[in-house]
Length: 274
Length: 272
Image (cartoon, rainbow over all chains, first blue to last red; front, side, top):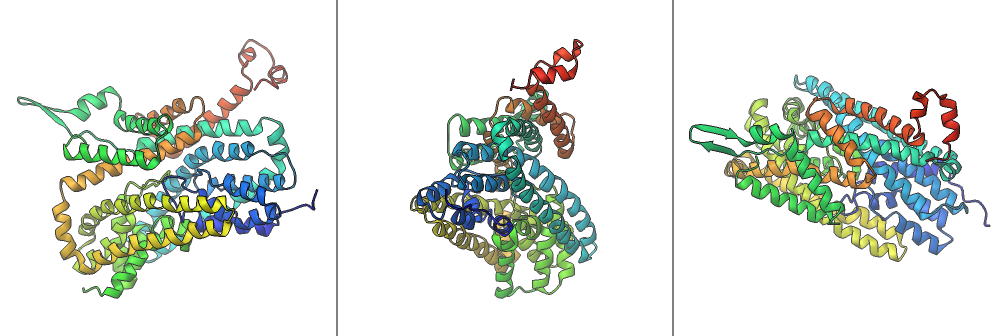
């Protein structure tokens, strides 16, 4: 075997910064952060597979697949994958399936958990503080808000990325041998799904604006029918329909988005939704 | 107050820099900082020569967007456009912060069209990057990842925001009044529906047995008990932990029948 191809700390940190700045530069409805990941790994892929054009191309294509997660807390995933790629380049028997398994198994849960912590919890707290100062014309409001946001999230993201890399290095034997990775994915998936339920309950809003009139009696359909049946049944139904179209009907995200827009358009114009 | 073309362009650039995904200030610096009307309003105030007034108006416009979340690639509203152009209009017209909010909110709905346009058009560049991947040309992928989408994003953001700011509240306000009523309601309805796409994409990514059951638990905890999301996340962690442990030792009832837990762990080691 050729000499060991080891990543230096500098390589790992450089990938982190490339990810931090450019992860969403080509964000899109088909592959989301896929090209962002390849962009972040550029120097790594060159270093690890530069002498083997087959493996080099395979690695690029491996990471051109759909990838989407919360980029700060979820940075633990590209961190782990970095270590896996490093081991693979040095001859460890790490398959495409193992790498894809880590990415697809963890990205959903970490998206739910990360967005809850960052956008759902930290951001409103800091904003409440910044807005109360800012509304009195105190420029410390936006300034302190900005500094605290960077001061909390950059270290958090850095720690997650580096921890992910360490985990991938230390745990690679355990992960491949035992069922620890399966346990981690199982637990994180359960937690992630619960959090996604909470998020959709809060952020998917579908309201029926229709009012049925029986002579003098006016009946608000939302309150008397849908709320009485099951609170939030409309947003739940729309989310399930969306999932069905994506997963079972294998529709493209752009197509599904078009369908949602048409539903909103028709529902809004005839006054059923509002 | 009169806004010059130069000032209007600068305000357009502030909107671009804050839009989700622009790389120049990092992702965090866009969505979590310049995208927020509190910060965007202050910057617009600087451009127009009165940062304090901009800050006050930005803070007011930010209030309805405190709980804003963009998850899974969907943005239900556009606080960035509301915070930049909204603040500029309010300062030009010299209105109080409360009126500024009513001016800005329709902008936040119109801005979602810019988001949807860029998320859709950017798909083209992924397909170009696919061709480069076949050739094994990583430099080209990195080029397609940054240059074309950002030039597109720059145009999509700066042009409308500059025009809206320059021609100002009077001209565009008339347009917005025309839109008030059904068109804005429709945008609001669509803005409420689109987050379903983000959630469903993440659910599809998890896609394991029981995912939808866990999802229902989280949904009901918020709908019926009104728990804040962070409380649900902690509960979710506890449930996830026990679920994993139970899956691993699925004959746990023996413990209840008097067996020691040590024995259970030993005999079920390879059960998973």
